[in-house]
Length: 259
Ligand code: TMP
Image (cartoon, rainbow, N blue to C red):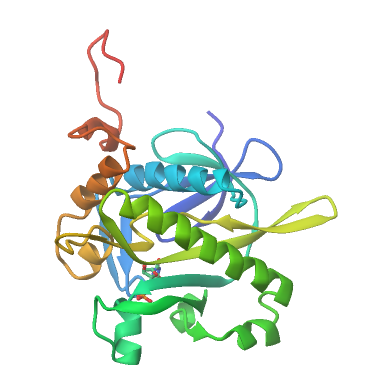
């Protein structure tokens, strides 16, 4: 079988050349990193869960009219996506005080913010993804004002969509990070949602107990990360209760048992 051309390898995903021009294949690894890859582990099944959860969320976002790079899931670990030029910003939306915002501003973790707050971080591992202002973004040309307008608008709509989706299954959406890219079609260019949306890139707390259901389980050495991600997928109705096969890679099944 011909080897596919690898375009890019990130901390949790690999991008391969797609079957048609303008497409790529996004492969979800089991690797987890934190603190700019200072901390690393391989958590069996994480990639499979994130592939399914991101598929579910991106499809829902597409249905409410926000363009995304997602085309379709191909298999347990891969999805077909539109090729974009990534805008070098991590766009964070926060509803509840947590993480770096608590440290930076001296807030109390868990406090509801007066309103959703958007932050921009420059995607630059060497600099540790520093917080930047919209004026930095404009002055250095990382995105133009029209693009920033689209990004702000889509980020707020994604926040409303995700807050509703998760609250319906008793999960509080504390905050999340999204990325955008430029898609070129002939002379036309549009900004679309890219990357992934999964418990790797969100903070998700059980509404009754505040039990952490996201990558903070790894960052804070709490254990039980894949069980938590599986719980998120189960509550969203993506996988069936106790269906371990959905996250364990290929398994041998008896002749008449399909899925
Ligand atoms: P922070 O509180 O550490 O700044 O994180 C804000 C949100 O962004 C949180 O949901 C986790 C997510 N995030 C990423 O997806 N990638 C990152 O590299 C970082 C630092 C945060």
